[in-house]
View 1 (cartoon, helix red, strand yellow):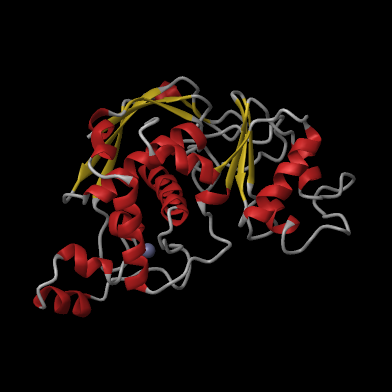
View 2 (cartoon, rainbow, N blue to C red; view 1 turned 30 degrees about the vertical axis):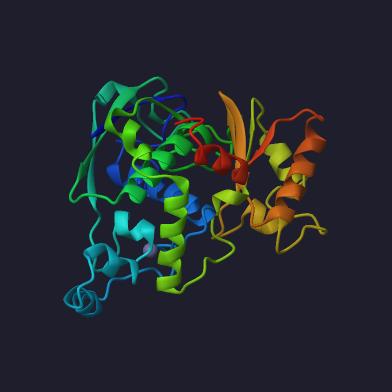
Length: 321
Ligand SMILES: [Zn+2]
């Protein structure tokens, strides 16, 4: 199973020393997982945060007991592990696929630490997925839709945050999937209702709730054909224009500082200069409206502000993908 990708912007390929060396499988898997989680939550499912204390783990004794009682592997898993960990793995349950990156040559990487460092624009490469066991149709549907959402509304690789001295807000990670290969069929094996039913049942069996601060694709937003400068982002999140490291006195602790990020909390607005695009996420409908109003104030009345739940409604039908 392979997909063919073209980079529309550089993809960040840095190591911990912030030096660009190679595109790592773990970085791509991390991005895939992040978007997959958001879509599962957006469709009503539970998806754990793998960095939280409360992340899934599979208790082998309980698992074996379920199997002995006549449950299938899938039923036994659904009692303990969220749909994301079922595919990407957790303690006690290994990832269902291996990933290989093929077709990247040495000269495709701009090395060093500069603002253009990374996999160059217009590089074409393949992602090869090697599945270690068969997925259920609902997982196939979700993975295909996740790839489609990343291509059209997301980004991959690390550093989808702004570069402190960059001209644009952000410019890493936009891709075009030139060929979906066998994944093209994967959303025909199930449908939105079956997926939602499975997600709901899994959530009830696990008995946990999503933290409202986690990325839920329902509350994603995007404006295409526009970008925000760092100054404009600072204005939206109420940072002090004189001293952007600080917030203005009227900045709200719960919303503005969450949105703008601070030590240990990443920001929630991502802006791209070429192609122009700005997206982000908030936590509920009310915050979506606040963001809409603040962005509209910076541009004009005719911005095409699209909300995550509208995109989820679109992918429910056969309109795309
Ligand atoms: Zn999980």
